[in-house]
Length: 176
Ligand SMILES: O=P(O)(O)OC[C@H]1O[C@H](OP(=O)(O)OP(=O)(O)O)[C@H](O)[C@@H]1O
Ligand SMILES: Nc1ncnc2[nH]cnc12
Image (cartoon, rainbow, N blue to C red; front, side, top):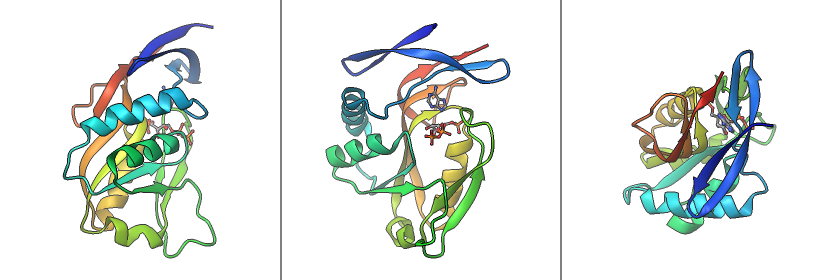
């Protein structure tokens, strides 16, 4: 299998290049279960987080452990946007999204219980990869709908096009 080498802090990984759509492959960055990469990425991104940030918002699932480390390192709380609506949620706020790696609609759902933790606050969106920007766009809409201000976007990698609005540790190409 072809791979693409990346560096996160002092840690290197050979990412497998896998197809995600007809004619499109990505270097798959999956931090789940990779403690070393998650810790390195969280520490590096915490050092780049603007001091004004009050709360972190992240989508489940691959970015979840990254948000945990970033929260621990920065001392800022984090909120998880879920991909399914649960019966225990109160007045959830939802948006549909299509990410490059999923290719079909998914839901992004903020539990109404978390709204007051975002309203009036300066928010950093945390993700592992920003690629098509679909996930980022929908999370931004949810945050703004509930009265939060997106003051930063941090990710381990951007992918495909350049994204000056995203503070990232590196960039991944798309493969044909
Ligand atoms: O910029 P985009 O094209 O929207 O892609 C970025 C999103 O895609 C991945 O999530 P994925 O849909 O693979 O979900 P998962 O983390 O639940 O596996 C990744 O974790 C980002 O959230
Ligand atoms: N290269 C990638 N690895 C993991 N998740 C992604 N989401 C979008 N691009 C991705």
